Length: 147
Length: 144
Image (cartoon, rainbow over all chains, first blue to last red; front, top):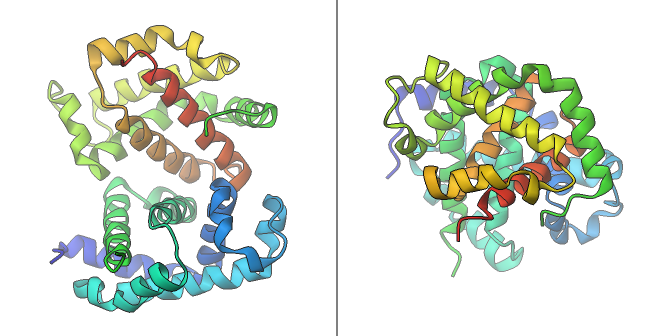
């Protein structure tokens, strides 16, 4: 069972109450597809992903970025049992979408970097640590149902 | 994975020219952050009195690390040869587990995103990520 300090809990709630999901989600996903191009393998039906400009302006990427953030919100609302909250999502990613779980870390890194860019100096080492701990729990929960 | 194209090198050199005067500050923040976010890295610095963010030893060492990165930018066309003595230092004297290079690289990228939000575009991000991975590989050359 994951233990959250008061600081960590408050920090995560605060971050997610302030970010614009419609900006952060698309920015993180498009950055992931650009920085780690092999992740494009999961998005064959998304049309033009030929270069950074195409990816950044691709409406399907943007829409899916928002879907991912909405998924993260579930974890934010259920911080004390992310594992159970994500059980079906984990099965979905492993059995239907067949995503290599190592890719979760790549998207998590991009999300961290996008958030850092947004928050600037407010993304202190302590806030950064809380956010990465949260993402680590999310990633571990998404990996849980893989067999 | 760590092959740098001509475009990558150009992107790195152009971006570095913009940010190099902030080298010491970037290094200090990246190192501070690493010690907080990845506490296992503190094991390499048990000889320091103060490991808190922005402390004197952290600032000093952050500057040292970034001057190494600056050197790598200058030697970008042959990192293996250019970083030979640094590789020997890390392999035989410091004996830093190479997995930590990736950790520090990530923290450098986070700091770049914070300090240069408009310049640190996805294109610059991928070039810098590849560059730091290439530096890490050159540093690992002499390990075994």
